[in-house]
Amino acid sequence: MHTKAVFQGAKGLLRIGCAVLRFNFRGVGASAGSFDDGRGEADDYRAALDFMQARAPSVPLWAAGFSFGSWIALEVGAADPRVSVLIGIAPPVTRYAFAETLTTTKPKFLVQGDLDELCPLKETRAFYARLKEPKELAVIDGANHLFEGKTEEVGEALEDLLRDFDPA
Image (cartoon, rainbow, N blue to C red):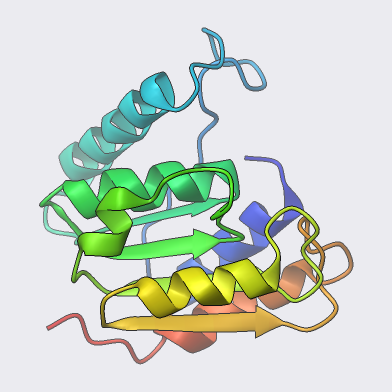
């Protein structure tokens, strides 16, 4: 939640009028529990979606995440019929299976650094090619996995990708 790329991504989404909820998965920061290899974290994400739907029932739900969180957001969001848009920042496509994400026809937006040492651009491009339409990929030049020195560009990329997006 305190990662600068997450913060700047949230700011970009806020600038285009999205309601945004940032939260820590179990065992991160002051959150209770411990890491659960994605199972419990998927439950955490579903709980966050439930919270947002209860808080703003007329607002469309979009699922977004960074790195490990993007795997959880993309997979949970692809499977949840309430979610209409999927957003992944530096998705770890070589570390986890994205079975739900690869089969969904929900709009998918990815942001990737071209120098990402954990999620190489070559593998991200191969993953992107396998995704069903609609989809868009923004690549940030000179950005590593944490987008060090390029975090503001994460928010700008999301804003550019989604400002004129019409989910209808």
